[in-house]
Length: 415
Image (spheres, rainbow, N blue to C red):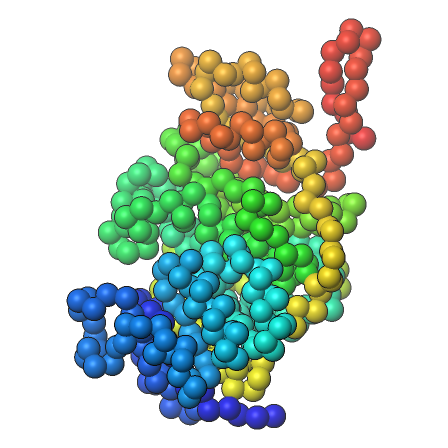
């Protein structure tokens, strides 16, 4: 086993980049150090002197002494070009850019294989929770049934404040922005995009299936209103944005991101603030639950540091579950039990799309239905801006068959 001296070229010196610099300073025995830091803005005030920074990516990519590139920038397109060039030059890469990885997963796999260079990204999913390494090593031979979790700290903080302080969604969002947990334009988090990108990474390591973002349906928390918040308060529930992937009874992968009502008996009920949590279920190991801080400079930097430490011993992901030519389909016949809110004028048309409706209400402005609906149908409905859906239950065993009775009316029965 070797212990390689790592000369690091660091791209980006924001919150996580500065956190990494500080934790590296506190771990002198790691046998790794930052040789060059490349940033974009020359005029930005930083905690280190200007002599420590460079502004041309070639200062890292063309430096033969640098054998590890750590990419921690915001721009996913620029990040991909950096990672692609670094891998092609034989430099190991560590990244935290989940959007970039999810959008280019197939090509990044090909680059790793072609140039025999490792690419690690533990920090891209759930910050301090070592979930990817666990899926790669501990669950490498265990067939997975499901993986689900709260993977976005910003939305968990916002939803938590609506429950603990009875804040409106907008007031909770404003508080999150003031504390730096949410951006001035928070749509990547609140719209569910960030959770979807992370789910794609988890699916690749849990099930060996590489998806592109368009294959995973997502609905964030940005459409949640007082009706959903009041429903949760009255029922003693909490709202959580959950990412899910599971194999159905036919062995097909089902994957989506939706807000969900959870009860106090649910492990996710107690996951608050900016914490993340993941529950995985294997065919042999049964269920395991991981929880940890999912945002912040030091938690994310700790995940980057873990990847750096692993690279000293030539560690790389093996993607043991991946099979070339895997044609696993993401099926459309996924059935969910949801609370769906929509405008009153659309009430009859939308209500008719439910396979089984157990509760229905409307007032002068809006209506809602609680019942079972297919995910494919839900996707078409949620295109409208004034429609919101929250998952209540996942009827995994429900297989519904469409029949016609003697009067010619359509009905749905459990098959």
